[in-house]
Image (cartoon, rainbow, N blue to C red; front, side, top):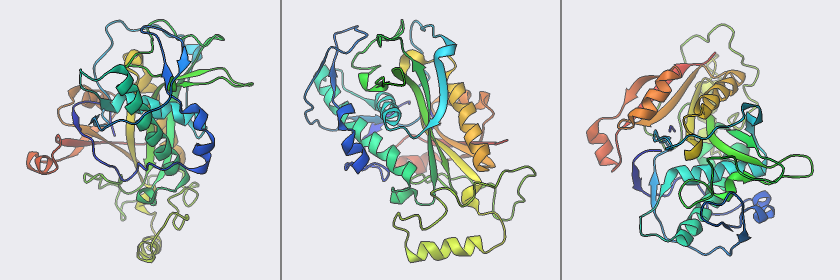
Amino acid sequence: GGISGRGQTLRARACVYPTASDDSKRDRHHRRPVHVSPGSRRVTSWLPKPCSDLVTRSSSDASSVAPTTAPSLDPSKIAVRATTESAELRGAAAARALAFYTYPSDRSEFSIRSHRNMRIDAEWDAIGEKIRGEDVAFRDTRVECVVVALTLDEDGALPDGFAYDANTLDAACVVPKSETTPALLILGTLDVNQGAKLPAEELAGMHPGTDDPVPEGTDISQDSFGTNKGNYGNGESDFDAKIRAYEDSLGTRPVRYRRGYLSNVCVLAAARRLGIGHLLMEESLKVGKTWGIETMYVHVEAENVGAKRFYEKNGFEVCEQETEAYALSLSRPRRLLLSRTVG
């Protein structure tokens, strides 16, 4: 979870599946890669989509590198919200593909775009499956995608300071206009995950525990209404069901409703240093409060000082950390776990 830094070799993740859902298959027309002229702010044509080989994936720690010249955006055209809209999830997937994957300097622009569109498809499928409770790895986790969206002008032109290129902006970040809504540019995104731990993450929060009292004023009305309520049709085994039933029988609030994790936090390179990250934090905490999350966690690479400082400014503090030896055993940078109370 946090803001992209050092790269590491691409590895398969439990939450990413190459197959598309029926809904996403019907929406394939959004997936076609585009060709844009260098420095252009408009799409000029569509291109067929070839295959590509693997590249380097950065961790989900949003980069602290700022653009040379920060653009100026009209605050009245910026909205932040949780979304389940397919086209907006597609834009969020594109922002993640831009933030989390880097390419060798000798890769052609065509090759980069080809691979990126493959990653956008995978990220898009993954977001939808987690939200719908179809991802087996997330069966004990409720997931919401939060986006910051900029309303574009009637002609769909990008604001000054933004341009389509191979490294910082892809046309898939734009949500096409419809009969009722204007075109949108997804500036940033993250996932809010409600559960005892974040799937595939060894570093997990320890608080609150089963015996810890529930803070006064905590909203528990959403308990048992999310995809983490159990037996949601996502492949829960009899053993898992028994463990969950035992936890629910203790007479205390289950831990899976009490902890939350932020993941896939990213902001478009051209939109950094504009407060977009703070908007994402504020909205994610609102979602957490609505769900009754008591403690929110986020993972950060230890060497990503900028990301760590960003979260600390938003009320997070380091609560757990990996040893260097453990990180080396996993062939990746050492990670920190930060936390803050919600409410």
